[in-house]
Amino acid sequence: MTPADLAELLHGTAARVLAERDLDVSVLPETLTVERPRNPEHGDYATNVAMQVAKKAGVNPRELAGWLAEALTAADGIESAEVAGPGFLNIRLAADAQGAIVAQVLTEGAAYGNSDALAGTRINLEFVSANPTGPIHLGGTRWAAVGDALGRILTTQGGDVTREYYFNDHGAQIDRFTRSLIAAAQGQPAPEDGYAGAYIADIAQAVLQQRPDALALPEEERHEVFRSIGVELMFAHIKRTLHEFGVDFDVYFHENSLFESGAVEKAVETLKTSGSLYHQDGAWWLKSTDFGDDKDRVVIKSDGNAAYIAGDIAYFQDKRSRGFDLCIYMLGADHHGYIGRLKAAAAAFGDDPDTVEVMIGQMVNLVRGGVAVKMSKRAGTVITLDDLVEAIGVDAARYALVRSSVDQSIDIDLELWASTTNENPVYYVQYAHARLSSIARGAAELGLGAENTAELGLGAENTAELGLGAENADLALLTHEREGDLIRTIGEYPRVLAKAAELREPHRVARYLEELAGTYHRFYDSCRILPQGDEEPGPLHAARLALCAATRQVLANGLGLLGVSAPERM
Image (cartoon, rainbow, N blue to C red):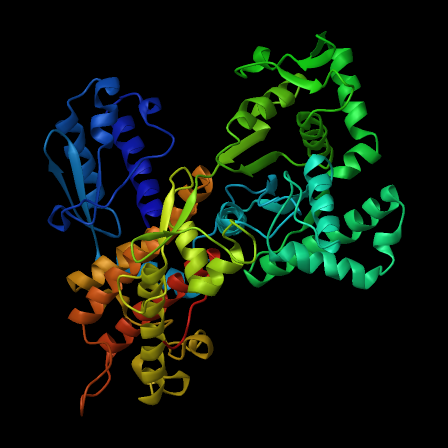
């Protein structure tokens, strides 16, 4: 019985108890919360539902809790229910009900924890979207890890997710990038407002390899050659780097296409017609304060050129025209103003501002030996995705970037994340999976594989993948305190996934995996899993192997959502 199952049972029981006593059933919330108490002596789960609804129902909380306890104790799967304090209810599950969680994991496999909460919701998830003027920096790297993990998590809840990269190939930054390439090709220093770093010289030489005549061309034509080839080469590097980091996109949307197609001009005219724009000081302004923004925004500047927000407005309209119900933007720490302006743009079009969600990610700092790491030789003064991966590897980089809330700045200790100790969180979690894989191999060597499962009362459905037969083990035998801790932790996984999706917080999965790994290691230290010496294998060994198989599955599921490998050996 998972926490969700228990909450459903509790809701039905509470509704029946209230109805039997002619009390108002409508006072019950739609969903009831059950939580694991901090002190295991208080039971497997606890709820304050009696305290929540007693006053509305016109009864004493402890009295209502007593009625609930009596009704729950008679229910299948409940060992005991006791009233505590002013009206808390402490619940213990029967061993077979707890064991059902293990069976559920083994039955559902990679789908364990999935739901249909977001079924039918089309989600556009835009992240990274770094300008193609240099390698992916640390801020973009954080979004690559978090965005990809969030996309995977939303998918487990039934969301139809499209990962999108907004390719900024229009505007002044591309012009500065182009002038920097030309200067490097000519052997000159970068322009004062240009880009430095060895990568600029490399791309400049690559442009000349494709067009040896580029420097001899007339100025305007020369600029276009370096712009088009240089941007293409830079973006190819960005895509390759992201792919090696385990991040790929469904759509690469070109900003310039919004201007070439007339989408920006059309969007501006629509807003003028609706009265959402006004003319002042030679410029056109969006009445964004009417829709909750902190100030009105210039859309068309006094020189007649479109401000950056003009492209953003047209881009949002394009996303909605493609049928997306929800548009999530993952932006850097200096983009707080985008929250108000994008929601205002949606409202100005007569759309629901809640179709726009803006997530703001804070800074990432690298530390080595207690000293900040500040320089990348390849990219000038910018630390890049490549630098981080070179220092600690893809798995550690992704995990380190995902395990903290995006609204917090993080320091990544390169020595810690490169270490093979339990202080390294990703090593700690991966080691648990590797240890479980070793147990599966040991079980197979002892003949506890598919060919020997019949005598132990085991099924063979999962033996090929897991190396052991566990489907029909007597899971009611798992009565040890550490077994119960591990089962209940496994049972929390669906709820963790649901909350991570709802709040857009992938770090919840990482922190959960660390809790699961720790709970497993404590179980391992307390409970002998495989028979030793001349000991004959029996039903308890089979049950514990099933528990190990379920734990291994959940660890693999969670690591997969973070884009981190689940090693068989370490």
